[in-house]
Amino acid sequence: MISIDPVVAATALGAGDLAALPTETVYGLGGLASSESAIARIFEVKGRPRTHPVIVHVEGPQDLQHWACEVPASALALAQEFWPGPLTLVLASADNVPGAITGGQPTVAIRAPAHPLFREVLRLLNDDTSAPVGIAAPSANRFGHVSPTTASDVEHELGDRLRPGRDVILDGGRCVVGVESTIVIWTERGWRIAREGGITREQLGRTVELRDDSPTAIRVPGTIASHYSPRARVLVPESLSEIDVDQVPGPVGLLALADVPDPMGWVRLAAPVSTEEYARALFSALRRADELALATVVAIPPTSAGLGAAIRDRLDRAAF
Ligand code: TXA
Ligand code: MG
Image (cartoon, rainbow, N blue to C red; front, side, top):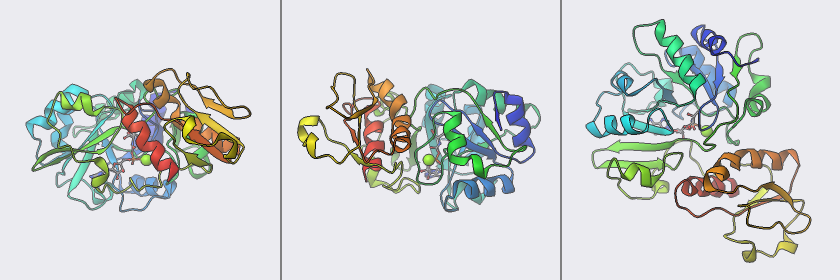
């Protein structure tokens, strides 16, 4: 089921089957946006409620018009600046977008992923049709679980729910960003961040003016608080001095920047040296905590600058 060949993945998608695809953020469970049955299977395989909309993945800014009924100049500017890359734009959807993708909402989420294998899959499929191809793809995890950042994570999450000989997991190595895309929503009063992610608030602010209400003030289906939950209890102190290390129920795992020493007897889940490396290690560290059947994960987040905001958001959800 695992392949490294984009042709194999494009062929499966073209036949209406599913392909888990690598992106720079996390792996997605992809199906052709134009295939009603493929979209239905995505929801079934993930165990995800049908009212949760999914992101349509496209080749580039030129495809925006096909999916959105109105493309404001600032949307084009964002796409030109940050695509291919970890930014998802939510715009008023065009009439042709299936309700199964939008969750029945009047909007559609669109992004051009940067991973070269995903781009090759899109290019191959676009070669075969005149209308631009879209691949609907939520993160390739079971509903409520931690997003996968390697092909074997996907196999572990969904392997028993995919169809052998038909569905494919395209192995593109470990995801380089490690947290999902930033989602921005266009409203009549401007752009709002609905989910912190791989493109930072600071970066966005250089291209558009953001309304600075907090992301949690906006209800995005599928961003419910309990997402990204490992089985272990997750504590998110600002430093070890905030907790009584002897009282934490063990076995305990520690996720913190390398300059934080681990208390005696704790398992070191990751010791990243930068915020970027922290983001890359985050989800696999949470997975490892489950594999090791840890009772508690203590995660000391980096500062909230840059990718730190997205890391803190995911840790807070994991801790919920
Ligand atoms: O990095 C990512 O964004 C990854 C990779 C695979 O592209 N995808 C991802 O998809 O994280 P998913 O489905 O796990 O999360 C997408 C989020 C969901 O919370 C969903 O509710 C929201 O995007 N979303 C999708 N369409 C939307 C829409 N029209 N309006 C508001 N939120 C939307
Ligand atoms: Mg997800």
